[in-house]
Length: 126
Image (cartoon, rainbow, N blue to C red; front, side):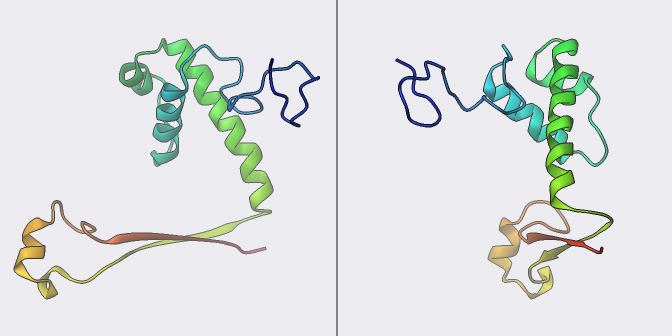
């Protein structure tokens, strides 16, 4: 017997993580949805449907629909968080490399923000 979101057994409807979210009624596995959401949210501008098509091996049409559902979900969520223009600032917190011990410095990979914590702040200015 299916368990209802309210906990009653009498409603006879199935409930899962997908209900009420972007991947609802989709045949694409949830893991591929998570990867598509990651690609969309970490890109600076927008993701072409070709990149997830190649990366997660789903048809371009399916990826296009997935990206539109993700943007739709983000748009409705974003509208409730902020009510006008916002200010965004980021910083990388951590010491200078010249002040680190040689053993710690040798273990760092990359340049600039390697080994530092990234902090992002958003403020509604209305």
